[in-house]
Amino acid sequence: MINKTVAIKSYQAYFNNTLKANFEFTLFYGENMSDAPITTTALEKESLEAHVDLCALRYTNLDNRLNVVERTLRDIHEDIKKGQNSMTKVLVGTAGTVIAGLLSTVVVILMKF
Image (cartoon, rainbow, N blue to C red):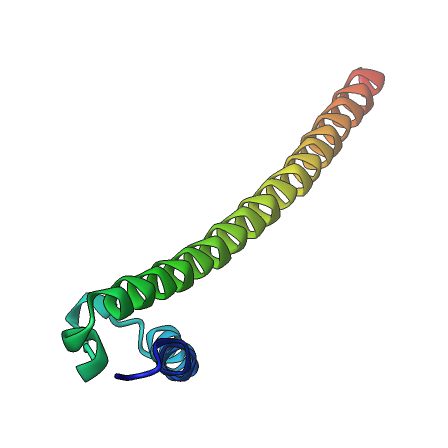
């Protein structure tokens, strides 16, 4: 009988390295990972408990990756909000300058009459 704990730990290390490589590939190429084949091990095919444990590891890794994506999106959202606030300040300043310029032009024209 295969030692399930040792097999799962060795597969976890392999799986983490595979996820890292796949994630870097996705970031570099922008490919959809649904095209990648899902691989199973001989241990999974022999033992339901090993399969369940490995699936739990896979879901944990997927959850971690989704958390990274959520954090990244949250950071992007904050950057957009900050950019929008600074752009609003620039637009208000520009509008104020244009209005002041127009008012000063009107005053100069009225003083010539």
